[in-house]
Image (cartoon, rainbow, N blue to C red):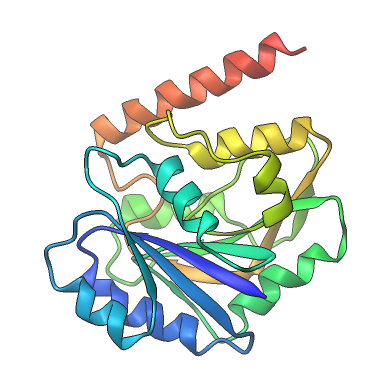
Length: 225
């Protein structure tokens, strides 16, 4: 069975499109939402789409903790991770992610992210230059992105997401998975629309937060050599 974990906070503008696209997949999946104190009526959309909903307060929240809590509530062997403001392009999204797990070495797969026509030029540039059109298997590169990904539950049980990090928990997890002898796959055929992109335009505060975490990850990587 496949499960989909979605982290959300006040995402009603995107939720119906996101959840409808997940429900229309050729591969059926349960949907678990970890909601971070939404106040925009998202609850009605969760009910309409038959989601299991877990609530997380601002005081508790971290990206890694939200994912760990959501995955713990899932019954699937493979866990897709999707941002609430991302919309799968077609009904084969889940199939194209899970098809990569025939190789037992694969711990996680992440898919392509594409901008929308009204995304900013900064976001279009970043998405188009980061997510290419060629599939690749990563045995050293720990780039990974939880806006559109799938992981093997058995690997997560050994390597949960770091709950102390303020962001980039996906790359920290990927680094640990590779260090344990696993591989990652970039699958461009499993594509989603991501309106604000991976850097949210020119948000300097977010950029600094991400840089701090990446510096921490790189220092651990250099220390293990």
